[in-house]
Image (cartoon, rainbow, N blue to C red; front, side, top):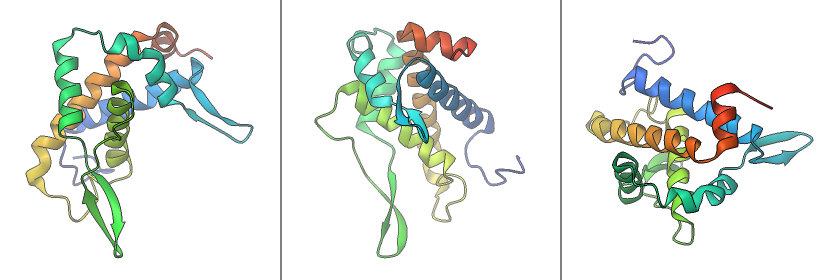
Length: 164
């Protein structure tokens, strides 16, 4: 048990691997030119990255990736919202007009948000019956991240070596 996450319902190794891979991916995207911001701020531009890799992403024949994408898009992570003063979970499938890659990476970002912002660790309404599904979501998100990074050469190099 981690002192930072004493009630974490997910395997720590998987959770840390996902969060570390996600953080490194955002770093790599910014280094590779998939960034937006101004003189005061910068963030990874996931939508531009999604568009740039979409053609290749849709042609990947990797069964593990296809299964992960299918799971994320057919049983997407829920989103926390505020309703009548209470924080609740809401089903929130991705918008229909987005590319498949955009939808997929949006769901990966939602997994990250749910983990990083504490919804899956501290939230009092968290139910352990969702644990297996949550583990599957994190595994699927990790699979997608790892495969997407490989598609773009500049992002892959930045991810592996750290380059500005």
